[in-house]
Amino acid sequence: QVQLVESGGGLVQPGGSLRLSCAVSGSVVRLLAMGWYRQAPGLERELVATITTGGITTYTDSAKGRFTLSRDSAKNTMYLQMNSLKPDDTAVYYCKATTPFNSNYWGQGTQVTVSS
Image (tube, rainbow, N blue to C red; front, top):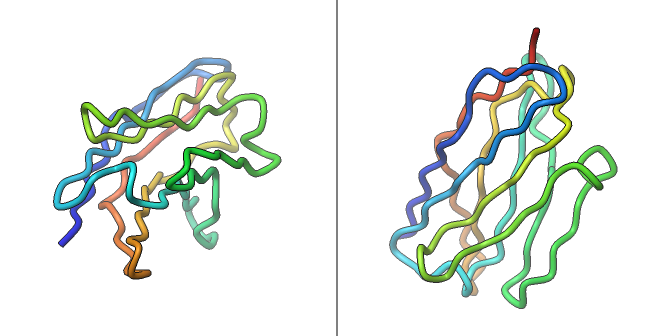
């Protein structure tokens, strides 16, 4: 059973930065296809960025150039570095993992609020 625990959210001013973490247990991070998603109030959950088992990252247009997804095998953790944050980035951010057997797991989410 894969378990995911997000952390690192909080309140930040526009233009600021945050780094989200997704700690993985029950599997090895490099064996999982993983991604960051977010859900703003009243809206559907949307993709932010993904990483394949081979380490290839992709970003949505809203994240490209501002967000960086990475993983640390030694810490078995995935990260999302978010820079130049905007009020529109306010949402609950979730990490997702997909196993080689195509089982999906989600974390509990971490709140990011961008406001002055």
